[in-house]
Length: 110
Length: 115
Image (tube, rainbow over all chains, first blue to last red; front, side, top):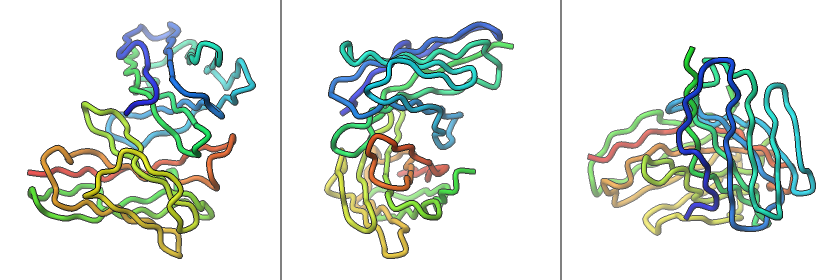
């Protein structure tokens, strides 16, 4: 069963706008990761935030983590058409495995 | 290129058949993970191996089995295939057990179609 859910399921924005995706999970975690998947391709790791961190940045990506609410958000600033993809959060639990959310499909319109 | 190699890329077979999917992890990575991605189920964790030993099990059916060999490559065996087994099967690898620093490197997947 899924350990996490993402919201929204789909998001369509204009190039240059910011995109925000949210992830909620159920169990305690060691860290939370975000991955990107182009259609039908393998997932690519974007960023990892540890359970004792609240915010992390990487280029145009900003991730926040609220362990009290069991939620995380991924912000992509100044989006580009090339950002069009599905984005997944993944929760690393104490059982040493990684469970993925349901994904958000982002479409950036040029 | 993630460095993780999966074969075959595409596979079409019939119900009741058995197939084997192969994965070569990145050089130096000891952990291998298998995931199933289907349209209605998202990305489901199946099983994890570390240095040849099974370390974690997810939603893996009894008809499915896997192993990791001494050279660290892994195989996922799917038997008595059903239509619902049609999916993308991903292998991912990491350096070690996910322990607060884990980042997975994914292969491009094996697309299985069961007719």
